[in-house]
Length: 424
Image (cartoon, rainbow, N blue to C red; front, side, top):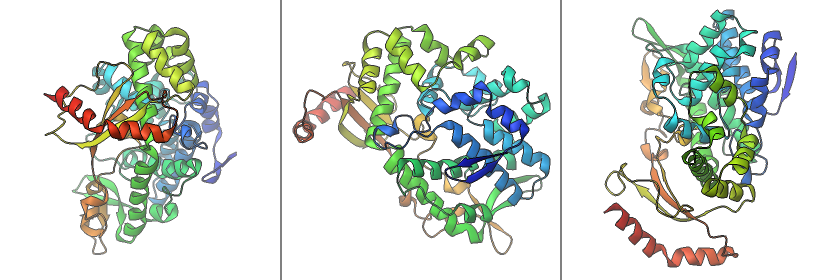
């Protein structure tokens, strides 16, 4: 059996994988967009977690066979790639930021999860009845283990979630294709061909590259950087994410039971059943139907594309904008958006990859970190790690774009004065 995919052409799948793809829990991913509301600025970016998960499954096998792993590991890695994103909530990483704030933190430790969307994936793999009717307990435990935090380095974990994982290899090409841009292109075959096992001490092995792979991986890292600056953090994408997050938070403050069923994560069958009812559209419909006041106003603006406008932005650091600064001001339709690399919305797809975690097997048989060999990435300025503070206002009463720009420019000094006053 096979699927024709936009990125990888024909993708084969077996009977077990077909059963998983046909479950309601996996079909739900068809209604969760990969890039939230990026289609507001890139009209073709309507692709979903569904096709991305199938592409990740496909690449997991390609990498596993490149590393000559045994058939049992290939099988489990394919299943882990297929199910790795099954826990995503509405609008993907937007939901993750809310869950990070409102979830029971003890569950992350209990299930050894790195973040809340991985926590939900682990919970669903272990507890969902449909998945339980297809996979046996041993298979579920092995898949969940790959997604969990691990004390020792794990090749399987590196393949699914590491500096050069198959998740990134798929979504960069897929996001670039559907957004209609060329920023995310790189030589996939050469990157996979360069992957190798690197021994660290007597008992540890990690996924790295051979020295011939320096240039293809440089191309991959630059693609990641340019996709981040041009697509993932496009001005409109940032504003829509901020509006979604603010609207959901107001719905929670208004004690909307329907919204709490999504974001106050609990280890119960009732929570899981409720969680699976929600996707991008059903969340919007629920808030528009049940929320009151400001929460509903944010989602009405999103639905009619009456977006807030960016009136101020500045690079921030611990001196001028410390972490203790509150992200909200009095006006409920003014968003002060502090975007840091620790913000879950930007951890994945991620602001950057720590190139020091990519190990290179040298031609002499030794190992070095990627920046020690790469002439491009030895310079940290190539991929700067920046935190930025931005302010968004509702300026839809000013019809012309030129007039909005004039309005913003004329009030820039006053905006800075207000910020300084807030910080005192």
